[in-house]
Amino acid sequence: MSTGWILGILLILLIFIAISVYNKLVRLKNLYLNAFSQIEVQLERRYDLIPNLVESSKAYLKHESDVLERVIQARNNAHSSLVNCKNNLSTKHVLDNLNQAEASLSHAFRQFSMLVESYPELKANETIQSLIEELSNTENRVSFARQAFNDSAMFYNSFRQSFPAVILAASFGHSQNVEYFQTENKAEKLKAPKVSF
Image 1 (cartoon, rainbow, N blue to C red):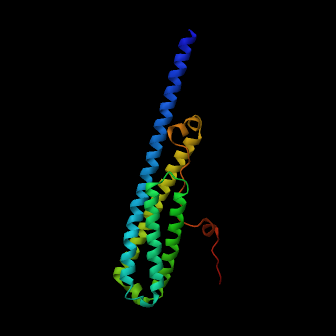
Image 2: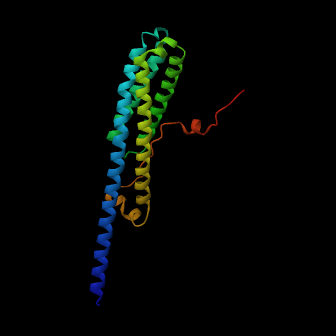
Image 3: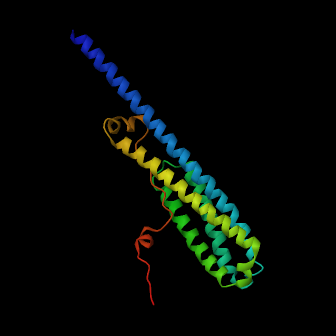
């Protein structure tokens, strides 16, 4: 076998490897983009439910308008972060901003939930209970969608960092890792709950 044949076979093999790496990077990117769109659907659902819940609660919580305003402000900030994230998902730290906005919204909503608990007539209202249940169901869906996104991002990142993809990824437009989506503050998550008797 001549040197020309060997070089030709090696060239074909390298082209095949490059095409294979490119196609897998595209497939994995589409998977994490699809997973993010599932998060987006659930977050939009939650963002639509929150104003309804706040509006339904206003009659009962006239003296607690600051809490209601914080919930709406946090919701608006989270929604604008989601829109920014959707348009720039591959930009570094854009998911960090969404994570922070979601953490602020969760904190504001926890304050609102504690407030609801202290008003028996509000707690007994069927509309409010229905909206709270819908929000709770949506939170579960967000959690599942977040896990699917993080799994897709991990597969993408792992493949992008492995050989031979690590050599070719940047030239194919896949130069950085995808960030993970975590809505809770890591420091708070790691704290053990305090129990007192």
